Image (tube, rainbow, N blue to C red; front, side, top):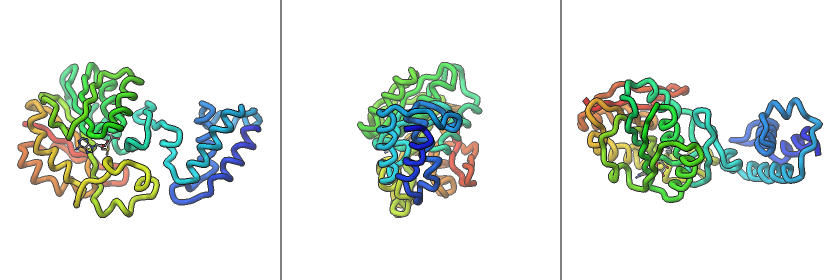
Length: 278
Ligand SMILES: C[S@@+](CC[C@H](N)C(=O)[O-])C[C@H]1O[C@@H](n2cnc3c(N)ncnc32)[C@H](O)[C@@H]1O
């Protein structure tokens, strides 16, 4: 079967719906992934004969997409800050807004060879990226889910990053003395979970999403421990949910931390809190 013929078949197998608005674009993306080519290559090579094993893989991926599975779980990989990360249903699919944390980290005045911690590492996307982008950085990554830990360790090895991944609740098992602490902990309020898009609600791990009555339960608990983790002058970058920057202001002050900045995401929501230990 040619690329052009297979694209028509795959698009036809994935009726448009919420979360899959453009079957032709999805078909092109899935086939490009199955072939290990860029999408533009398909456009330039419509008459190329697709090998039967690739055809089979693309068909099975299209069937999974049609059944509602998120595209990054289907192909098992997701880009973050220009690198590919293995993902499975054990981990949150890395989100573009989390790249704000990297952007902010790179703009901070950090010492050479900084000591960094990433709490709630999931796929390890933040820990690995910080380890590779901050010169000489050594990163400790913590995660409560054993299944997620396996994925994070795979990504650390895949990118040969200076990251140690440990299992534990928040940062209780980390010693402290960090120059930078990053955390993207679950922050969706309990009652909002039911109204999330089905692809998120029914497929991504609850433990990566649900953050208690107002979404900030874990972040609050983490804030109490944060001063211990930071050396004087060190920074923390916390990804938070809508309204949390305001809701957490008193706790930030009570922890003796200074708020340096609130970074908005592309939707205009205050998404990352930049804190500093005086
Ligand atoms: C929102 S996801 C973020 C994952 C990843 N850092 C990212 O940005 O894509 C939150 C992660 O925190 C982990 N987590 C939840 N509760 C935790 C806890 N008490 N201690 C440590 N990690 C926790 C979840 O398993 C999940 O991997």
